[in-house]
Length: 295
Image (cartoon, rainbow, N blue to C red; front, side, top):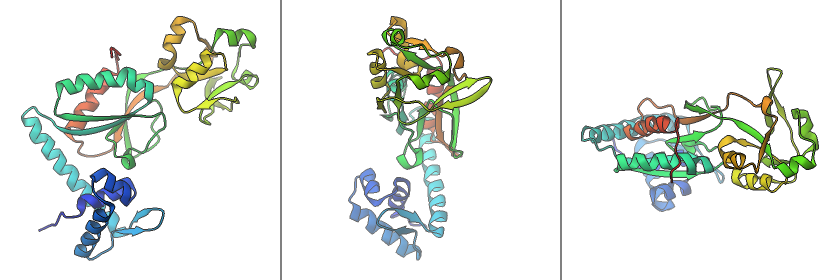
């Protein structure tokens, strides 16, 4: 008969990358997690993990055992969810990551309505601008405004969006309005990290390295700075729609916009998604296609 003692700790260490993070996730002590995995390795008669001062790695046999355990646990979770579905009561936790203001305006209202419909499904929404590793972070799905790069994930397109270059009227009146992306060299550009700005020119995608003395990893911060006349901003349309409607920001370089920008729901490529996750993905795909932000 297969033993399950230590399997939960083993999976947590692999998926969170360290004994400390695994212990935090499980609500246990680090010593307990280490002890359980040592017992599991003794029972199996093989080493599953190699430990260094910086990181934990799977051995070759550990990789095989991890894949088998992950599949078994996913199957059990799916079975539990299916049983709950038979009673119209899907339950369990779904962890989501989404970019800040988009999460506030569009994702949160949809999640509130979903939970009102499925009160036994617990939801954890983390908001952050940076792209996180879904597997390492323990997330079930993410909302992203960039194309899929990780081939181990599935991406479901929700809607097409615009990414705009904007400036305050006072700033644009004091400086020459940029007519082409090459004109940006003479402008202060408010930077989201070190990412270049992308444009379509002569039917070809090009990246432009910009300069500027103000940067942030927070989109709203950059919008406030642009509104105050510090420089130009390039950002997704929903961040600046209020300012555009009020006339406190104006769009430039409109004909050079990249046209294929979109919002995506991204989730791990698994044969059996938990029912609660699949339900939420379908719900969000529909809700975000025609979003509301009543809250």
